[in-house]
Length: 384
Length: 248
Image (cartoon, rainbow over all chains, first blue to last red; front, top):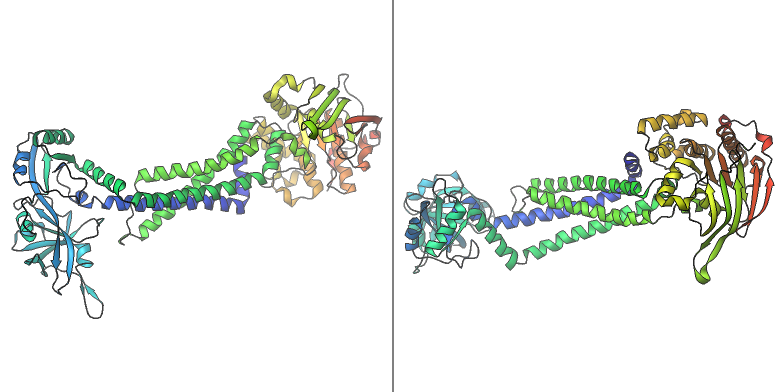
């Protein structure tokens, strides 16, 4: 009977196309918009992701997310280093500054100051130069995206020339020389990223009483980072989070304080709604067209449960095929947008959610049809 | 056609069926008394709306009666309950419909195997039995074709094969020839009558088509929800008809 149900479905090509397209459309919109949403959200903690080395981020307890810097006194670094279980702790400066380029234009950028001696927290990968080049006078490393976009020089004919190693710029009226180009994750703010040493970074920015943004900590061997976080908090009064916790905290901030989730939620919801309506309508039409045959089967002694299973099999088949096509198209779009500014990240969790949503759409459509099949009076088949 | 057993296949006494309630109530059956013997071909005739379809629906167990008594092959559907009635229908009743009701996306062999699949027969076995039955109705060479490739008469033969494949003891036919021309209708009826005679099953045929009355053992004439006259048919004329002489 299962095979029979599928033959009934597959035999009507035009209707099948309509139903599958409805599910595909819904699956595509949900997965694609979901992937962009996840991509954008993952950009909010790009700095944390790119800084692979530390297990733990220590900060002022009032910090809400990575860009919400509330400076600490430099002495806090030594207090953290004194906590049992800390293998090492390094200072990190993170702030905003304005760069004056060689052609006289100004550009806002994020500056990261790494511990002078160890350069802990440096770029995830270097495309040109070495991280150790930061030890040279006035040295800075610029991320590739910044170097090719905001920091790029515009010629008179409109052509742009990327910032290169050896180029100079001014940061707060101080000379800075580009010694390397780094490969970084695109950030949410899309501002160019400049790496330099901690002491130079604090010289590049206006003087403040407190300048230490974060303390980066690595746990000693065999020390659980989560318990070390609790110990650091208890002993120093500062907030300490593991890398994943800090990412989560940053994402939560953006979810709770920006309109991004609502905007994407509407798009995803619309995809779900439109998909449900289209699929429901097409599936209902399909069942109505086949109602005579379902009635015939019922009259011939097919139990209601058997007929229901036929409808469910048809719905699940449609869901699987539509889901596969929708996800495939979404993945293709993601692949094609690689290297573009479009944020696109498709984790397996999203595929599960999108798969469940697609199944719900198809089963909702099936439920509407099932009602019709179940309430069908078998005697109706004699009425022509 | 001779009656092959003493106990009737269908026995109805004072069967009542009403559709709707209050002022909108329509009394479709107003106390029907009827017996259909085993191996008998009984035709139900009468004007539209006289209750013929309602009566075969009650007899086939696809519609509950409101009153009276009715036993089909020794079973009372009320005693069997809905699930029992469904099982009973699957095993014992074959259906032939006016519009054939063949599933258009299935081959004719698959269509014929449906009652066997409903009864839990394995697919390969059901398919083999369906092909054998199609052979018997003269369509053995076309088992892989879709119904819409066949003529009306051939489609009705497929429907008959489907109604017979699981070896039912009662065949219920609703206007089996109304969509066919006279010659084709006659051949379809020859096939039905032949099958009934060979298999000893009982047939209840609802029809408006006076041209096929000659195939009936008895004719029950209905009017206004009652059987108003019961007369002998002329089935002896077709006693020699065989299933293979089906319509084209």
